[in-house]
Amino acid sequence: MIAFSAPIVDYHALAPELVLAAGICLVLLVDLFVPAHRRWITGTISGLVLLGALLPVVTLAVLGGDVRDVLSGDGISGRYVVDNFALVLKALFLLSGYVVVLLSTNEIEDGGYYQGEYYVLLLSSVLGMVMMASSRDLVSVFVALEFLSIPAYMMAAWKKRDRKSNEAGVKYYLLGVFASAVMLYGMSLLYGIAGSTKLSVIGEKITLSGPRTGIEVIAVVFVIVGFSFKVSAVPFHTWAPDTYEGAPTPVTAFLSVASKAAGFVGLMIMVYLAFPLARDVYRPFLWVLAALTMTVGNLVALKQKNLVRMLAYSSVSQGGFILMALAMAFTNGSEESSLRAIIVYLIIYAATNLGAFAVVIAVARRTKSAEISSYGGLFNYAPGLTVMMTLFLASLAGIPPLGGWYAKFGAFRAAVDAGGGWGYTIAIVGAANAVVATAYYITVMREMWMKPVPEGADTSAVKVPASLVAALTITGLATLAFGVVPGIIAKVGSLTDLTGAFHG
Amino acid sequence: MLINNFLVLGAVLFCIGVYGVIVRKNAVLVLMSIELILNSVNINLLAFDRLWAESGNNDGSVFALYIIAVAAAEVGVGLALVLLIFRNRKTIALDDLSEMKG
Image 1 (cartoon, rainbow over the protein chains, first blue to last red):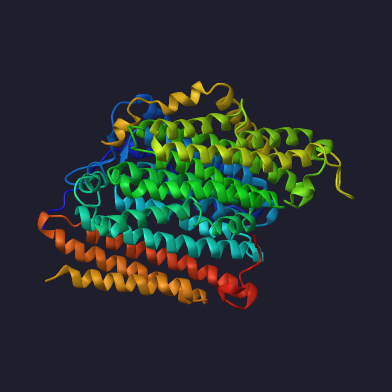
Image 2 (cartoon, one colour):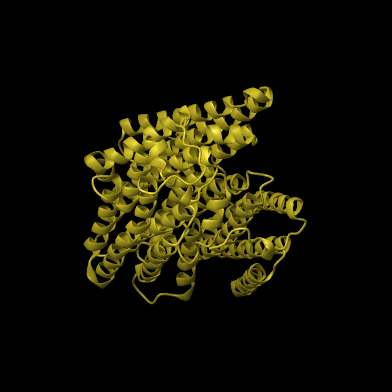
């Protein structure tokens, strides 16, 4: 038996999580004691909590330096750490969480849904994501994944009386739980191979030398399958369009950006730390997933009539580009450019997609519809929203000088850096898809700018609430700035010890 | 003691669970099948835990405890969702969940 010795906790490094946890309790209590007509205050508090949790992230980044072990002690060191990689992603999750709070404020209040509980769940989910960025152990990866998923299942079904929302929640729940069960089976085999749940130990045990055993193949494939559901990679994407359409729109924005990014972060942590030397297993698998995800996502998006559903398929296909960069990691020393490409892609995609959903929410307040045809002649009565939507769609399509082109550029560079048959073919598949994708983004633009206003539509000027204006400003500025001055984000991606710290 | 016996038991339970998830049309039975998969994972973990016990490592049993706790939370949410569906539709057959297509 081993005697238990309490680990030493680095409270500064743990501060973002602590602030969030305290914030969750605070929102719960406020919700309990505040009369119903003032419950909107829970939304304000949640926004402040998310920004408050950002403070320690900033101070940790300023202090900089090496990897900080949040928990250090006998056998525990290196399992939950804070490094530059974790800090960048924590900031991303907290800020996307903040924008989602801005998107939710009016939607949740006007809809008459439970407000306090909604924000508690949102904060819990963000807490899970923040934990995911720091996890370097199978147990903490699993707990973080469930922590971010379980509240999201409930949020998807938030419109209690709405049959579509119920269906969205149940589909998301059943597939998500099934996927995490399959992933756990893979993880149990990983533990069996390595004798430790620490990812870096597993990474040393799964090597390239010697014959590949069946148990290693099953373990790696099952873990990737589990995360593929989370990032809605084809053929594991079937829940995504239905859930996105049925869930309340702010929740859809949250799922398609933050939850998806967290899935990719988990997948990255596994690939980079636990099986960097198993590329003979994961490269073909991720390669096929990436090619399928890009192609199928795009082709189905082409024929969508509902904008939210179209954005769902577009987000599936955007995920394919991230998978492309990930599939090519550890091929001809391309791991650093892949890592940067993925992080930059996640950041830019978050800004752009949240912005697109902000416009959808603002327009739906007037038209009560997300059908693409209801956007006809939008420019006539909501010129500002039309310009913003055009900006976001052009960025999603990857048209310079908007953020999206820089994200795509990074992903392609990672694939070309890797080179060889695998790298060049996937880059060609990606390039073809980038062209196809432009088609459906342009359809929406044509609808807004050139088509006449539908019969009987109210064409007085659209009032956009202040919180949505704030969300549109943040996302719009980010989308523009990342594209015009990619230097600011390239700096984030080229932190010298990003990969170095990874192996700490 | 052979670890194989436990791993085979785990693998069989896993297969039954996956079969149940794919074939069953009743939401509650699908939930039960998922529990079966989680239990097969726990059996695996505990078997491996014994295998690696000599190296002074308890990761497996710790992991199993976490899975038990999280699975309980998951099923709580799952049953709540099933209740929600039942209240609105008077059925929990998964085939009837087809409001959205394409």
